[in-house]
Amino acid sequence: MVYTHIPVLLNEVIEGLAIKPEGIYLDATFGRGGHSREILKRLGKHGRLVAFDRDLQAVEAAQKITDERFQIIHTPFSRMKSVCDEYGLTGKVDGILMDIGISSPQIDDPQRGFSFDKDGPLDMRMDKSAKLDAKTIVNTYSKEDLTYIFKVYGEENFAAKVASSIVRRREDKEFTSTLELANFIKSVIGGKPTPKNKATRCFQALRIAVNAELDELRTALDDSLDVLADEGRLLVISFHSLEDRIVKNFIKTNNKGQTIPNGLPVTYEETERIRLATAKVEPVGGPIKATPLETSINIRARSATLRICSRLKRQV
Figure (tube, rainbow, N blue to C red):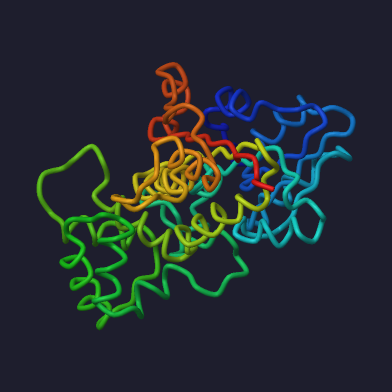
């Protein structure tokens, strides 16, 4: 079966990248290539687009693009800098797009194990060659570790209760399928039915833990400072508060620059000069959300937030 993916905030991304026809761009999370294809339409003969994805199914989809300006690399985007070092692109990239999280084809295919409303194996690996999967975490991690995962990565109020119940239940029979786990979590949380599936937060947490998503994001953000050319743009689309908070704080911290302790005999103008000389990025506008029209067409866009920043000129 062919699973499709509608690119989120497509027009806003293209506008935010401010594409130079002969520029160099990175699509750090190819997915099914909706953003990449639009970027390619706007590149000139000597423009270049390099895409990354750790999902082999996404890489196979990308290999159907027959364009000499395009290149797909099977790797997590946390290796962005090492790849750019290898290809001589570090410090030369005009724009980076990171579309964080899970893609529609991964959710829609029950065999990938991401969905809590379609039965499949407890997998959740974005890279199928990775060793750690959700089944291992659910059936072998301690109560304390499971509580941490559900509480920190899923922001689940019933984290301790769910973790304790899972540990007790698996003594008799291990968890093997997504629906089995989802229904169990719903029964543990209990209460009145809600529009949002009660297993949502725990499934999100497991997915993040399996794929080390927050660590991947932090590494890629830090490395983007070296990869981007002066005035190059970084665009990040996130889908939940944990990711967005990391992106927001990254921009804020690297826009702040060096601060001068209070009480020193330094003028405001001198303080600003030092701050600007040591700052690394500046925000381009505020957070961008999908329009009502887009969310009516693609309901998964409703939780998306796009943040944009520009790499400040390096001080010589």
